[in-house]
Image 1 (cartoon, chains in turn brown, blue):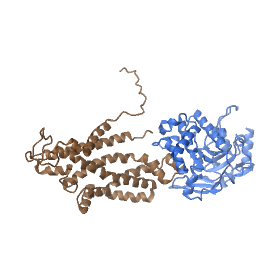
Image 2: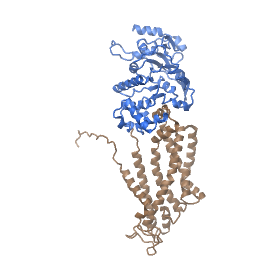
Image 3: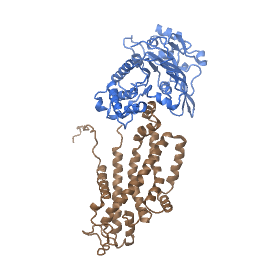
Image 4: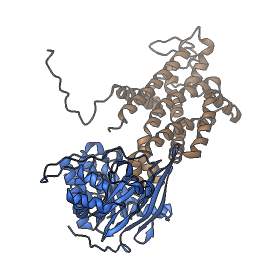
Length: 282
Length: 338
């Protein structure tokens, strides 16, 4: 290009081009959800059917992910595990997200000593190692998914509340918040209709990260025998199944691990895409 | 334009402010940003509140409806249609705000919610104060957009504030404020952020609305041209106090306070003989340690020992005219001589 040429930016389009992260997220999470809802459509075998003629076979055309020590097809087991693991991602985070958002909005709006007390609660929870705390709670309540949701819920809402309260605290000082008060709107109307839509973006973005973390936590607990119980197909459980054969049959543990990585990546991409899309045009 | 009658009876309809005081406790001491303001606004009247930045005019406006953030403390009396807004419970006050008394702000960009479409923001005021159903609210929102003169209202209702220009945003702001046909509009420098031609349109709109709906308006501005174009009466503020009041014509023709004189002298006038523009020496005082006596005395060429020791009260010297200056006759005589 000659030095004198002036590049004139094309007029800004009303809609930005779809970010690549969004495309990636839709593909990964779409496939994950499809497998979670209709595993039988994708799994070539019954995930619980034993096949004594195919014990611990390595990856082949008949069994792309190999078979385990009972001859169960690993591909089918990984696919069927999507149901439980996607469930964990959604169920473990939705409650904390909703509750934490409401608490955070109220705390951020009220401020003062309420905020000071809340700050100490946050400190207490954050200084505690999350995984250890959850394992402790599950150990007390007993293993199983339901108790895992309870254990996560007790702790996890704090992170959402912290994000939302910080954001609401900023928003309530802006002119439009004053304008809303000047129009005589009630506190609840101001908090939830006017401030929250401006304050919720970080929490939504974190929700995506949190879903990936929930899957990690769910499989960790499954691995330790505190989460989903065998013979249910859950990635952590599958990895635990294969741990004794790691040197001779690596595929039993490795493929569920890859599924965790890919799904986690999908949620991360979704988080980035949402952060991009929800950025307010000011 | 309807001329206000000289002896206004504000007991029934209008706004009557007595001894309005707003203080902020700061680490450096108590700042009195609004200091014992008295102000009357008759129905259908437009009163201009004029002063430099930091003179307390915006705070006065906010204090009237107790819209002052912590740690600000408001005291005094604000009588609105026979009720004292200062003594009212928060819940009752909310019924007045936005319904009977509405407010518009200087920065229409930041005073509108960036993530809600304007339709929702207009309807919000209706759903907060009326029992209109969804369809009636939609109808009214459209009507309001037309009243404030936004073209293609039907389509633009679903747009977001960032899709509107500055002038159009201020129109949206006014539409929201007008939703419940308020009797009093508190306008906080509504045209300051706009360029001059748009400013003129918005002023005409406010005048037109006053005539159509019989609204009273308190108009805060630092722009004397705006006051001359829109207001019936004006009050000049300095350091949180009112120093002079009167009809716009009276104050412009014969300023009695040296500060008013300085303000008027600092504005060039078309048609007048070319003369030096006056400027007011010095800076406005800090609100935490105001000078003793008259707050203006360090900048005033008329100041005497009495001004330094004693604070001049705001006193009436002619029908509808008040001034807070011991030497106001001298000042007025000077103005005439000049």
